[in-house]
Image 1 (cartoon, protein in one colour):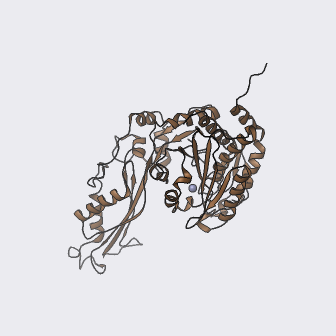
Image 2 (cartoon, helix red, strand yellow):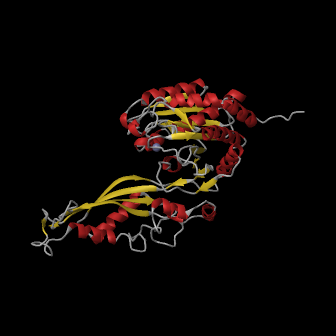
Image 3 (tube, helix red, strand yellow):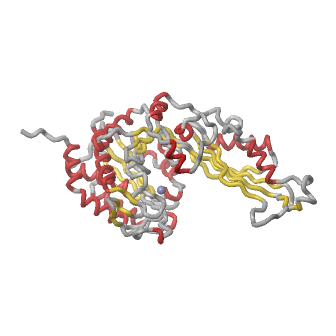
Length: 457
Ligand SMILES: [Zn+2]
């Protein structure tokens, strides 16, 4: 007597049976360049995706932006079931320098259980896994267990300049219950993870000019103000030796971590000695008593990216510089906004060095989805079904991605569920994806659809 198999078990079997064909097909897909920065192959790959989605029975179109188009696919045939918006990006980083690749970036090659090609990890291999998850359900059962909207961007690698206006303009086409992005790496142990947020960023420049020309440090030292000293003194008023940012009001709106976030962070694996050895540092930055993940997830940072002025060439030059420049960024946690931060920095500069020019530059809002959102446990169940292990839960990651377009413009919960290995070498030569993780990604995507299909909305 044989037990009746569930749809998901049959889908998993289908994925295993088609392993070789999925590998061949993803290799075919990444063979096509789609380099947004160089406008190379973008239209062609967008068309390939529309064909692929249409071929699976989905409605699919490209939608123009002011630059590279979005690809939008949908299949919404399950009234009363949740709708998931799957986001990915079909553009890739430029492959240069070619000479550092062991095999050509657009001739995908398998070595040691990994596929090597530009875009295989970031992000074509990952959203291809999502596509194969959809296809597997359609082939095995003839339908998707829940409603799906597929959004693939063509400008992620050039900073997503148009996604915010696209999402605002087409909000009704993107009306899902949750957003899931499969991009970025797993934990270095290949343990799956769910990420609930990202930090934002606000970059700015400070320009200081104290005289109409550089001067002789003997003839004018002590007479003419030194632009570098002036800028250094200003910077020193912005962060103290204890590592505290001393810009008035900056911390006033920071939302402290919830108990659930604290608990999740306490469970994250951490090898501080390995991190120190890797960076070649003896101790962490001040303040010393702050937890490692707290630093990356729950506090803003003020980083001086560059400080320029005066003479730095060989030998001596007894010059008194009239100009100095600093570039800085502040990483933003909830609920800091670039507007708020720029206003506070501007006020600080006006109070301490009114003749230093403050120039706001690129900025991005932070994003966070509450960890107790009901979809979190559904995603967790899907990962466990596909991978057989508990995922690590990251309340936030330190870097910045435009997730705010989903959480703050669409006002939907957004989760990142990556499929790639931690050493995927994205943005670098020899980008790669472990084949087993690619297959696991297809299974995870398939399980996610099944688990969402078990929910009633
Ligand atoms: Zn990237």
